[in-house]
Length: 473
Image 1 (cartoon, rainbow, N blue to C red):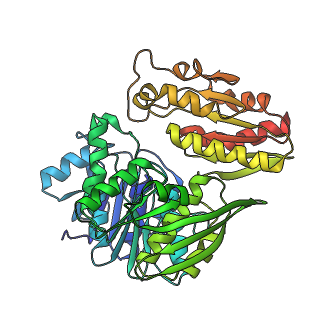
Image 2: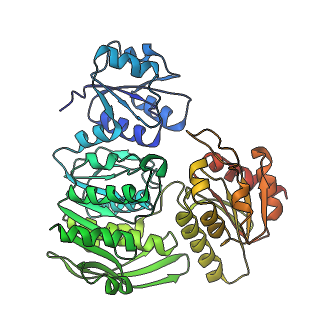
């Protein structure tokens, strides 16, 4: 075990890093860190006692008056010539990835890890809220901020530790889960893996680390992963719709959604449980729309049962779940026009969110439309899935398409947002000027429409400005 009495985190303001920093502080560790800029997570950590420097300098390792016992970094996001990283190597200070640190923090707890190409944050968050309602006080580390708790991490006093297992750099293989959930598998992060086959294989390897594997039967790739796990002698449980359970009879259907229907602003769900310890039906409602959220809730319900919680109380928690920041997050309204913000940045996620939005307006029956303001994330992802993005975005009625948010990547010649817009089948406005995007969105929006800002980059900053533009239109 690493000495975690004094820990320095490079990039401490990131969603993952800030979460483990909170847990370290709650456990009494001395926490220091650095980040390129000030942010709400940085300010929250400072208020809690962390010492944080803005900008990177080797002197930052001594913010607490002495060198740390461990330095945590993201090998994907932090360059090797970072002065703090260089000094840590020179001083012989143990270097940990966030996943290494999280694995050590989970030691001795019942570990519930949730993985998949899409839906990790929502499903993890649902599981946390459900377990809290069931009387547990789980520790958790998630990639988004729970609306009700207002935080992305917590040091609980219960036996269970709930966390996302990130596959983007294979760091999910660092864990030893008691229950491993796989929500879905679809090619992504090919800049790291190189091939689809290597990306798919990491989920098989993840399943091999778990005592119990939970897979979504409605996703054929996740189900196939479960079937292979059974062939290797692993214990596997499936969740999903009754139709999907019939398609995969080789996987025990442990949580089957037998009924789902829209009831006003909520979705009514009935699920049938069938595990060695628990059988029977439970009912609950969801405040977040969409079939994908129904499936996520079934995963949270089943995984909660497998770590020993009472199903009726888990269902009560699911009914109380109010969502996660940037997952169909309601930002406000102008008259009957509503604005939401969502993190979707993969074609499948975009399609799921826009389908949920369309179901919502169709249930209202007032002729409202769906308008999306989308910012592509990464040149590599845009190039790989341009046709799929075009198809998914065309589920809206109108689209404002921003320039690509490159994040860690440098521009690629010929790869622009236009390779998406050229294949779209709905009215689309290319908007290269971020500052005028709110006015552009307002100009294509009609009274009563649902407006979605969508993407993993800076597009989230536009929701409030769009509301202002709509008010002045």
